Amino acid sequence: MCIKKGLLLVFIYLCVWFTLTETKVFNQTDSLWSIYTTISLVREGNIDLDEYASLFPKAFHANLTTYNDHTYNYYPYGVSLLAVPHIWILNQWYTWKGKNLSDKVVSSSTIGLEKNISSSLLSLSACIFFLISLHLTNSMVKSLETVFIFSFCTLVFSTVSRGLWQHSGSILLLSLTLYGFLTERKQWMILSAIPLFFSYVVRPTNLLPIVFFSLIAIYRLKLKSVFFLGQGILVLSIFFYMNFSLFGSMVHPYYDFRKVSGSDTFYEALVANLFSPGRGLFLYSPIFIFSLYGIYLKKKMEKLSVLDYAIFSIVILHWILVSRNLNWWGGHSYGYRLLSDTIPFFVYYLIFSVQYIDKRTILYGFFLLTLLISFYINFKGAQYMQTYLWNLVPDNIDTNSGRNWNWKDLPFLR
Image 1 (cartoon, rainbow, N blue to C red):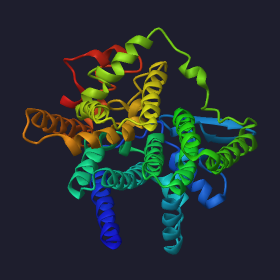
Image 2: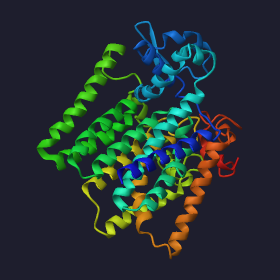
Image 3: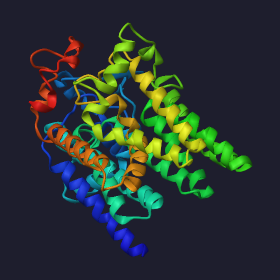
Image 4: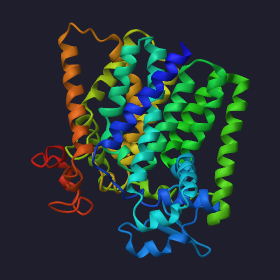
């Protein structure tokens, strides 16, 4: 049985990875220096980008910061650390062929590498969700349906897999954490502290899951929670030490919460992040309506747990936090990018709809309709580059955010 499950997981990984990589769209903006940082770490043992100085004037988005005469990626380096196994293997291959990987990326581009590695991280996440669904439903068919929804009916397909964004690593680590808390095995819950606390290294908004999952761990593990918290403190201690060594501060330069200090667009952003034609979560993944139905089913069956209330809190506070961002629409992207870190939680509740919805009802027909629409919209974002060019034509979304409300010019209908 274990062998069959293992082979099935390999099959799921390969199918998802192949589909994500073979669709045409790429998006390399904030993620521009992520691969260069990983290559520098693998080849030189540091994360500075000094060896790529010749590229700095040519970069469309510089996204750089300097300290002590060294140049670094301005964005968090956590996802670059997650990419180390992929780059290490690739570097070994280039070395075996007598070539230099650094020279290759200087003379060409890292766009293809970003897309491949991000797709790999997300394919691993799909495998984790197969295991989560199998644990909850005990159904192979329903679990494969969950994998399809996670991989191809959300921004995993259309946005997150298009480049090595912070969200790629965030989704993987939060999926692992969720699995650890759902298996009901204390040892798995304790070990899940590592991906949970490392998720903060990948993306600062993951401080929210750290707080709430840690409270759940203390509640469930009692005295054994010291092992959970000990691992987390160790991960953060290493992170803070690295930051202090590199930047003279325990906090990475990107981790500046003044960016979410609020603006006069806050209430607009709250609504827009859920329902606007440019960035609305329920417009780009209407299947998530059935995440809400899954919550209703859990309440009706009296299965809501303390963990559920923690997840509610994480999602709501994350929504509020990103809506306070001055750049609440997430720059040049497609759909609800700044909410994409919550995808694992929405899919978790979808599992209950997948499990219990009656296929003989009109509601099931509506479920299938939202699934097809979600797939279509995210397929368009993954396959057609004009959906991303919407951010520039007829004018730049960063200088005219009101375009997010233009129902006559929908990105996914271009």
